Image 1 (tube, rainbow, N blue to C red):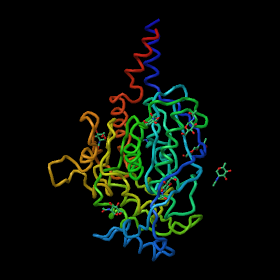
Image 2 (cartoon, helix red, strand yellow; image 1 turned 90 degrees about the vertical axis):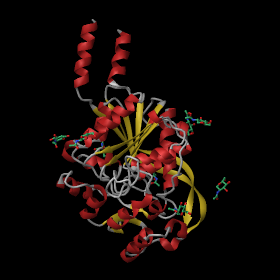
Image 3 (cartoon, rainbow, N blue to C red; image 1 turned 135 degrees about the vertical axis):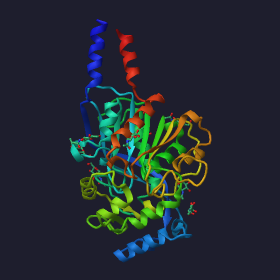
Image 4 (cartoon, rainbow, N blue to C red; image 1 turned 45 degrees about the vertical axis):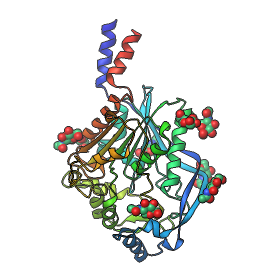
Length: 387
Ligand SMILES: *[C@@H]1O[C@H](CO)[C@@H](O)[C@H](O)[C@H]1NC(C)=O
Ligand SMILES: *[C@@H]1O[C@H](CO)[C@@H](O)[C@H](O)[C@H]1NC(C)=O
Ligand SMILES: *[C@@H]1O[C@H](CO)[C@@H](O)[C@H](O)[C@H]1NC(C)=O
Ligand SMILES: *[C@@H]1O[C@H](CO)[C@@H](O)[C@H](O)[C@H]1NC(C)=O
Ligand SMILES: *[C@@H]1O[C@H](CO)[C@@H](O)[C@H](O)[C@H]1NC(C)=O
Ligand SMILES: *[C@@H]1O[C@H](CO)[C@@H](O)[C@H](O)[C@H]1NC(C)=O
Ligand SMILES: *[C@@H]1O[C@H](CO)[C@@H](O)[C@H](O)[C@H]1NC(C)=O
Ligand SMILES: *[C@@H]1O[C@H](CO)[C@@H](O)[C@H](O)[C@H]1NC(C)=O
């Protein structure tokens, strides 16, 4: 009897999960104190878009401060486009909430390129997690908003992340009856900034965070602005939504040659998403210190542009990497709960590089060794205890 059960387990261990996903639009009712900026910042032509970027990236100036006129309460019900995935036969104990960065939508975590060969979602569900990815407010199929300056900002978006988290925790997420007591938050870039800030403000509402494409060094964000070749997004987007004008800009911001497939660059360009000027002006909204004490993994590509200036190992001091300095922000954390990992041969857009899936294993195993998710060993133990 025992032998037969083990044989089945071995087979199950080798088999890939059967991915089952629910796509749905979820309404969240949220409120935040947003920054209020001077409306003369809204660019109404491509010359004004470039002018905005020139002011935003000028050394020695701080456009966030120069344009700030006060703060205001913003609230409302917003439609958020979500995707919840798991292995069809699993009841995962941990869900990962995935927050994408600028230029993408939730498909960043589940690129369909080469038959989903680069999918982080696939790797996570194979490792026994559930995932919730969502288009950030203002992006993709989520509500675009009406005011790209004073509405669609980091502050309000963090409340979206919080509302989705609460729904998964208290069993009110549509179509997901499970009440998750174990929730991990994984971000990329601007999504990592939001994840970091969420953990700082609501430390008991997350069991662990993974900050990919991230550091606390703001010195290089201007490269991202200048190299983005931004223009007005056009289409249904009001003035103040910007998008990258060409594939070269996307390569400069996100990809490290020669470690990506030329065809994935065209794929990314075809799916590129706009950013709001309110988001750009609130990128620096995260607090300098963070009282969260749970597990924190910083996971950044060696050649990351916006957070490392293209070389994460060039620190100019004794610290091993620029992302490693994030540990200084977590003032109460035990050493075993913090790691900064530099993924080799990779730029800022981690999921689009050749070696992406090897990096996913580092993240997933790190979570499991920190008690998050069902490690194969723990699943086996549970089975054996039932026999
Ligand atoms: C820029 O100004 C904002 C608003 O006053 C402030 O919060 C932020 O810390 C400033 N950034 C820098 C790099 O000084
Ligand atoms: C936001 O609303 C709260 C509660 O209603 C109020 O105390 C606070 O002053 C408001 N903040 C701003 C910036 O208007
Ligand atoms: C949000 O979604 C609901 C239901 O699909 C729809 O009726 C409503 O118009 C949407 N709201 C906005 C502002 O798009
Ligand atoms: C769900 O959304 C993803 C894009 O994020 C898409 O690839 C997939 O086809 C959608 N699935 C369904 C059943 O609509
Ligand atoms: C999928 O990725 C692996 C490496 O992770 C590679 O060996 C394989 O050729 C890729 N397959 C496709 C269809 O791209
Ligand atoms: C879940 O949380 C939301 C937001 O705090 C709250 O409105 C709702 O009543 C809660 N539902 C349950 C079943 O706890
Ligand atoms: C977090 O702590 C606050 C204040 O103690 C409490 O009201 C809230 O229920 C806690 N939330 C969770 C998810 O434990
Ligand atoms: C691929 O990524 C893994 C995990 O970080 C790393 O151990 C390995 O050295 C990488 N391979 C290459 C060729 O960069």
